[in-house]
Length: 390
Image (cartoon, rainbow, N blue to C red; front, side):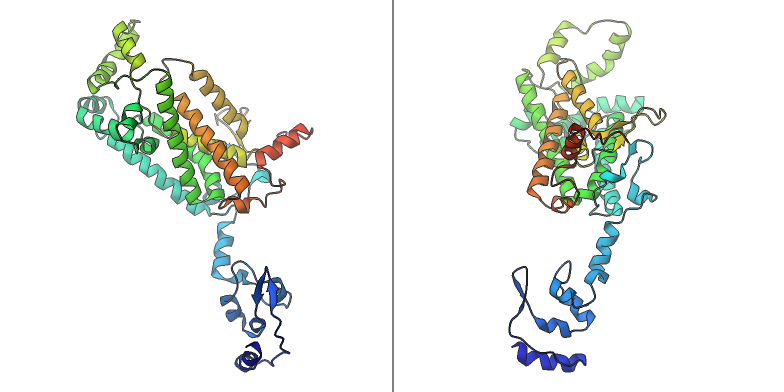
């Protein structure tokens, strides 16, 4: 077949036909026809295998396929410009200090990360407005308390607890991760989402990032449900009337140094507590960020330049805080859910890295001997070469 075709291709290309051979070239176990050598560069690129030209043909001096649209697009995605806000991300100088030696080769552009995180933030804003349709001032808060029908509907579909789960509303395990009732709670979680999410997004990509966010949220919700059950909080959730009473009288009791009525304290101790917020997803992202970028540092207070700690140390402080808080009976924070989200992040990054799933397959080009960057740095530290000194 090649013997008959080569003279015609030579006539088409204006080159003399070379000596033919019926023995095909082999590359990665696949036959590569010699007729490719006679094609013009544009035709060679159209027949090129994805990524690069086979070595036998590349050695002939043929032009590389890196000039194609796909290659230019990939080069644009992997571009890293530390002076560009589009590539650097928000808060990079005030709160988050990147270490150049730990920057894994980005596989996705800064533009994609901005669009993806803005979309996720917008979704959280929409649910926040559903909780607070009248705004956030004192009058709006009173209106929200009085609008009990809407608050009850939101509690059934955008919070997670034992009641919602066992009544069949299992979607609340996921929807609770985009739900915030208080603006300060929302602002803190979204701030942390951008801090930990932007560099991670550029490395693992859209699908893996959203999957991690969802998995962390579901793990947080499931852990909260199990913790509620183990703590004996199996009574019915607080009604909207009871919540309204707390909202109206709690500050008055606190200001007068008066205790909560004993019957009400017993009710609070046994009621099925709801949980909501993106904290579990953020903790999962924090765990992945610490594993991939162990030399990066965070500055909790930008106005005090002396307080800069490595990212893994910051995550460890979160863990200690949640372990202490989980023992406090009256804490309004879902510490158990935070730990569940963190555990999901650890499982996610470990499984994806060592199975080389998706974008993690490409990340193995990082010079760590196939180890997770965090484990690689810990091994350096144990050998006496402290990588966190600089």
